[in-house]
Length: 262
Image 1 (cartoon, rainbow, N blue to C red):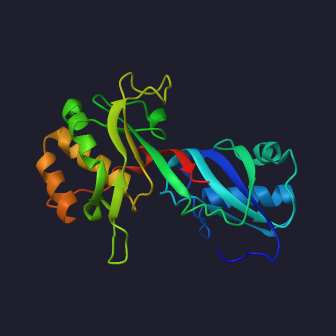
Image 2: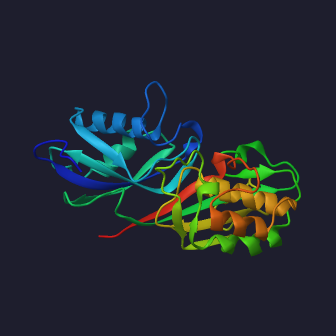
Image 3: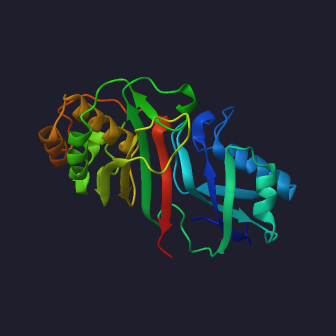
């Protein structure tokens, strides 16, 4: 990575955020993003803008993170109470968890060893609207047992072109999924969430644009009885979809954890 300053300190900061009112992590002009809010808060705490932040990955609008990592490049040593100062000034839907000093060799993008995503969903009678930031709810009847049996078929190294939106010739479509399963949701609870809800858990070193949402969308169609394991097997082997799906809604997707190889 090119030097941002001639001399600087490097920090790895872990945060959590509810993405429902943000247009993703990446800073954009005149649009509310998580990075924009974090940078604004850091500038207020430090009383200057002579720093740079870089996230471990992009996130789509409305996607949340239980564990997101960003790198902070700056001139000065951060104070011991930096995390507390951030939390005092960040909005309620963003929380700083920790800060760790790292060296210049650390690469926050290429150094991610594994990312774990959760996609939370329910189905049946329409759910309470207060749950909308946390899960996707379908009023269709889904065959959840069939979905559970097909989900592990994503595991392995495959051509995921059919599951990556706008994947051009230069896009990396050969991806490895190390875990993929649908389980009961015992992670995200609330009085306004359905009694029975579920999670798609997906792990891997990296994912293409909208890949997890497209995988979830495919499994929804499996649950509806429109697609099956043969459609998946063919798509992963040749990289072309023999079906038409759109990404599942973003609000059910949560970046649960990022592990780095250090």
